[in-house]
Image: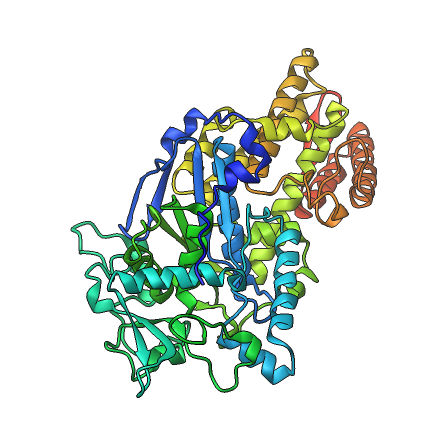
Length: 549
């Protein structure tokens, strides 16, 4: 039953970028990230120079993705993109849980084969990731494809004396195997830290909203696994490594092992897959805040009990909330990704999901989407006007080739501050304001070539910063999405912009005629009407120009 293969290093085996020398930016020296286990922000140092290994818990593919699921994917996509911009080679693993009680139960209720249901919703998640510009993982393993790895890992835990097999009256294994928490004195080190004199508000919020090892009572976000409620356990804290099948489980959802027929416990999957693809120890383990306990606490314990080092750093993205309550299907407040995308462009949805730092709760509302649309209008308006003024756009190669060392310092400082996206976004709009000022001056300045060079430098910086957040409107998937997803490249105008340009130009011409006739009241009225519509007028010697506020 064993699997004798050694874990692969996917940076050297399948990644084309492995042939490219690593040039880590000097900016990487300033990167600081939060660690859930220590409750502290600390300097990031990779385990291997120039390389970063990240494992993020992916979806349990029981039903359609909702905004809460995708927020975590976008949050860690931004983390990944920042590492790439810093020059690291990144191995990014995001798993798929395609076998569990909820999948089996829902498939049975719907009259489906469990594996068909899992694959159907796995494709829905993939489509949502792609639509919202989430980079494809280096590898995306399914739980069902790694049974030998899980069986080997459980056997190591048993051999090391940290688990036990439940047997029947005849001494035969039942298929239930549990982790022996009492045998592992380090249990609880992820979620139950020693108190420090310094108050960590982020940790306090997590403790209040996310269940911890100290919490008692029902957990509405992580219902108890029936196997973990078994009277066969030696200790209430023990958790299932392997589970005997339920009577209702189909035959093709059962695997034979030395400790009986059954299927894996939830936690063992990620320990096996992270070790398979990232080896003995890796830099970052990520996931949603609600996975902190019991999933990640149990995962850390069983990985280390098997004799392998755990992740060097644990990072958790906070929830999407609706009126202060966590958005989840179990609470009836889930918003499916297709329904949100039916009313908003994908760029706007991604911007809204990534608009705050990953550790901050994200309140989902119509206002959040309105603000995201306004951000898109400002971004696309500047990029389009700059492209027209320059006669074209910098190439994608130029944009992606910008090193973190060449980005505006306030953007870099924000991203290095535990991926503070709010600060990074503020830096982008500061640069856009400067660019709009340059565009207004372009026709007024004798040294127009010098100003054009400044405009181009500013445009390149704006697009490179946006690209770091996955939001360059002239990159995929936004370009293929058309006007709803991306801005014009400046050589051809979108229909919407062309119509807006014609209407505003007509108003500017009328204003110019009024000023020429010294009818300043009418001129001011036109300016004020445009201002109320969110359009700023800049008057210069060569005429008036406009931009969206």
